[in-house]
Amino acid sequence: MIPWLTDSTDFPPVELALRSPNGLLAAGGDLSVPRLLSAYRHGIFPWFNPDEPILWWSPDPRMVLIPSEFKISRSLGRILRNGRHEVRFDTAFEQVMRACAAPREGASGTWIHDEMIAAYCALHELGYAHSVETWVDGELAGGLYGMGIGRMFYGESMFSRRTDASKIALAHLTRQLDRWQFGMIDCQMNTPHLASLGAREIPRAEFIARLQELIHCEPVTNWEFDPDLFR
Image 1: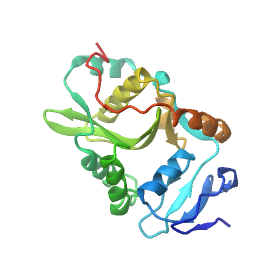
Image 2: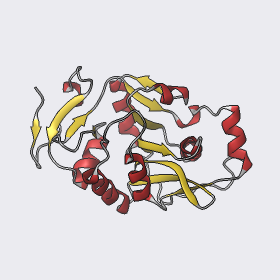
Image 3: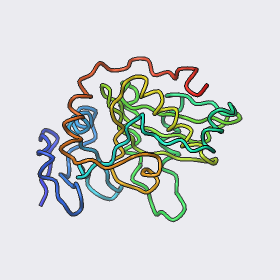
């Protein structure tokens, strides 16, 4: 059994999360800004389908990407240097979320529904949620979105409409976060795609300990890319 949260109930300790399904911690509550910020500061995230109650997760182990460990293949390196794209922060946040929510081949439905979009757009307006966008020929070609608290980034989802467009966005993000001395990008769950890019699993206890250091670092207030990231 997992606890049911009311709007005023605190999260239980993450150590009480279920082993199967891995990391399921609680249900209920709401997607208010205070609730979501509390969740992320404790290493918890929401993940649920539109016809389900809100479900809260903190898996063990945790998939993370250290910004300096992002793997750039030779082909991606050539793309990053050719200058045929533009990468921006925060100019099309809701567009990125809705693109991430679009149907994908081999998948049914999405967990990025209108309730989630409204909640993260509110976080974006307050400077916590960010989009990274790859633009090609004036069109949004790919990107990702996530949360930044202190010097910790929490990745949520990414999409591509052109080959490697999401990898271009992630390469720029990791390079910039490394310059800003961000310690981790939370990738939540293990996937072969994330592992191929340099992400790895760490024990939840290690994740939480490092998280508590990073969220109390001075936050970045001007989310702009340095112009010389790949020169």
